[in-house]
Image (cartoon, rainbow, N blue to C red; front, side):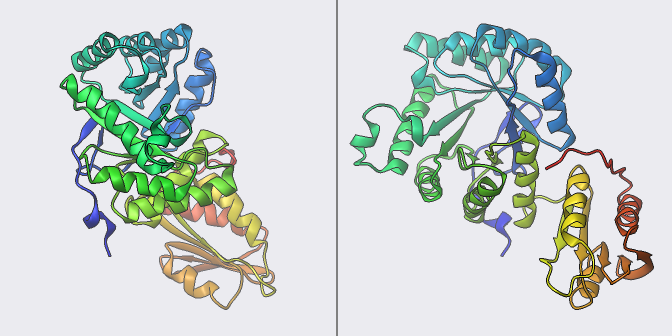
Length: 365
C-alpha cells in the first residue's frame, strides 16, 4: 500500500520557502536547546541542523533580549525560523519584526482581543503563519473536567477554541499540533481534530524521552499517524542533541516511503557465526554517513549465511569473513579486503557512488 495516496487532504501554508500541507512533502523540523540570547551558540546549532537537512527550526523566545537576538540569528542562517512564544504578545510582535518565518503561539494565552488583533495584523502584513500548539500537560483550566477526563477530547476542545479566535480575525494561515506523552492519546486527538478542520498538522510525541526510549516511542506514534495519512510536518522530541531528532525523523519518513534520500542502512544483529565486529562497524558508519543526501542502500553483514545476498541487493555492502571481508557494489564483488581496512574501503565506495565526501569527524549520534 502506498501511504502517500492515503494522505489526509489539507490546505497548504508556507513557512519561509517551505510549504506545509498535503500538496507538499512532509517536512522535518527541530528546536534549538541553546540560550537564545547566546547568538554564536544558537547560530552554530542551527547551522549544524542545516547540515543534516533540517527544514524548519524553532527557537524559544521568552525574553526581550531573546526577541532582539532573533534579528541577528535570522541573518546568519538559511533555514526558516519559527519563534516559540508563550503568554506575551509583545514578544510575538518583536519576533515578527526581527524577521522570523513563523510563530508558535496559542492566541487564547496572550491576553485580550486587542493583543490578539495586534499579533494577527502583524502576521497578515508579513504573510506569516501561526502554529497553534496544544499540549496535554498544559491544558486550560477546566477543559479536562469538561471532557470527563478525556485528554484527547480536551486537546481538541482547546485547539478549536484557539482556532476560533484566529478565524474571528479572518486569519486562516494556521497549522496545528496536538501532543501528549501518551501515544494513543496523541493519535486519537489528531483523528478527532482531522474530522473537524482542514488545517495542516504538525505531529510528534512530546517529551518522548532519551535517544533509545524516545526514538522507539516517537517511531511508533509518528509512524502510526503517518500510516493513517495524518501529518504534514514532523518533530521527534528527544532529550538529546537536536541533530539526532532530525536524523530519527528522516529514518521514520524514509522507512515509510514518504521521503527519499539518505542512507538506508541494513546491518545484521550478529550471532555466533559473526567473524567481524559488526556492531562497531555499523555504529561508526551510521555516525559518519548521517549527512549524506543521496538515496543509497548500504548493507553491513557479518557472515556467509545472509551476508552475500543482502550485500548483493544493496548499492554497497560488505559480507564479513574470518580474516577478509567481501565488498559488493551494485550487485558485483569488487574485492576481498583485510578486516582491518574494510571500513575505510566501504567509506570510499559510498563516496564514489554518491559523489559526497564523508567526514570521519562527523557528530556522534
